[in-house]
Amino acid sequence: MERMKYGAVFVVIFLLCMVSMKGLDHFLAKKIIARDAKILADKFEKVIRNSALELNKLPSISKTDFKCDQSTTENLREFVFDASFIRWAGVTKDGEIFCESNDIIRDISKIYTHRISPNFSFGVVELANRKHHEWILVRHFEDVNYTASITPLAPRFFVPLECEHCSEYTISFKSDPMLVFGFETFDGKPFVSETVVLKSPYFVATFELSGNFEFYKQYSTISWLFITIFALLFAFGLTYLVKRWQRHSVSMHAQIVAGIKHQEFIPFYQPIVDSRTQAVIGCEVLMRWQQQNGSLIPPNQFIPYAEANGLIIDMTKVLLEHVFNDVKSLGSKRKALFFSINIVPEHLDNDDLYLLLKGIVESSELKPHRISLEITERLPISDLVAARQMLDKIYALGIDLKLDDAGTGYGGFSYVQTLGISTLKIDKMFVDTIGHEDNFNAKTIDAIISFAQKSELSMIAEGVENDNQVAYLSAQGVYLIQGYIYSKPLSAKQFFQ
Ligand code: G
Ligand code: G
Ligand code: MN
Figure 1: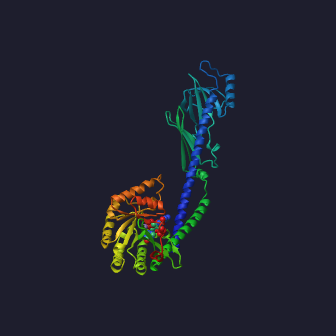
Figure 2: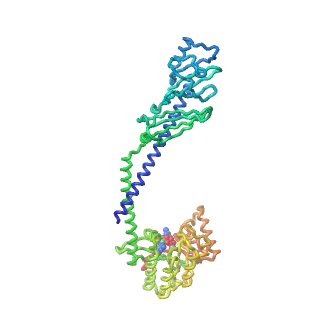
Figure 3: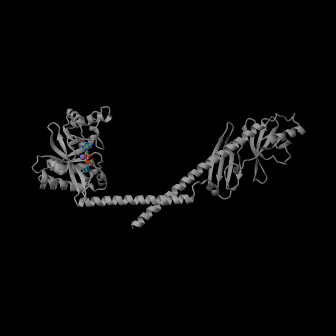
């Protein structure tokens, strides 16, 4: 069962990893293809611009003056020889050739051109077999033209490709006259395609590079072997971590359950002192985990887990029983100190806490006014009305409620009123700002105090560490102090002495 579970976890992680690596590879391939498409489009533009500059070097002509003799033919021939991309040039009009650089028999009657600047046109001659085409650049005069044939760019000349028949490109001039041409060398179906838009003051053309699966594969940079090995290792590692984490939480859970059974959650007591008289008037009960091996674990190592996993309820029960026993055996003759117990919102979800408190109040010397609850503002209460109904039952026993960590969390004014809070515990965070009046929170402590006074709430300041803080608080009317200045949390023995 266990094996199958982790097997499934492994397979899921493995597949997810494969899919995402392949996705990444695809993404990268598309990026490189897009870059190559841009290179190709730039080359195309450059060839045309270059050829136009070359054609501009030829002398101006008109039909009446022009004679095709030995010297003009020779000039054209030299021109073609010098020009980079031009393989034929001629003087033409309406598909008729008057003079040409070399006597290749060519038919320029089927020429489709597109105006690309005031006196230049770009075009294609469609050849009989339609497999190839010629690029044509025309320089216009009044009644006669220079026409040049340009070597078309085959993609394989500059896109690093091993496959001959796996890609094509098309260039389309969308405006009138529509002109579409390209290289159709495809085997199979197009798989990827990237588009670049060419814009000049005279025209807008769309350049599109497409390829079949074979073409796409060349751009793929992460191999299947690597992906598989990586995914295997990754899945192994992650499954191992998941397993460890599960074991850890299972053992945490099991250990706490055993700890509850053996009543290992014991109270420490931190005195709360009236700074006017220096008298201890009560204490906060702080949980410690005393394991059978003798180690004492502080709450931050298990309380968050216990609070999140529904274990805190039973732990609080164990804790309360210890408090009750401590009072009975060590503190019965002592004066009426109160014991402030930490609870979480979940404690108010059902009758358990209420019944436990009721039992203690009815059967022991711990009178209700000596028990107090503190609920933290750090955790939200989902149903305030239901919580208040439960609290009313507890209040009826004579037990009151303090707001712990006041000012740090979800509470707020309405919360205090709705829940019927008796006392605010001013968090250490705000006490720490005393003497640092530049701090923003320094204003907050005054606000909290004045809110409490207006609402007629009692106050206890937490985390008080020096005389300065005591003096400041005292000047504001806050006399009940809990903090290292008086005492750290103490074991039962130390506290009751
Ligand atoms: O004891 P210590 O001083 O380290 O307390 C650490 C935190 O653990 C405090 O924020 C306190 O609110 C919380 N804590 C201590 N005891 C209990 C307890 O019995 N129940 C709950 N819910 N929290 C506790
Ligand atoms: O439940 P609450 O978060 O209020 O618990 C009070 C916490 O503050 C406990 O962890 C307790 O040990 C700690 N504490 C109490 N007094 C002082 C103090 O003066 N200084 C410091 N640093 N911590 C304190
Ligand atoms: Mn507390």
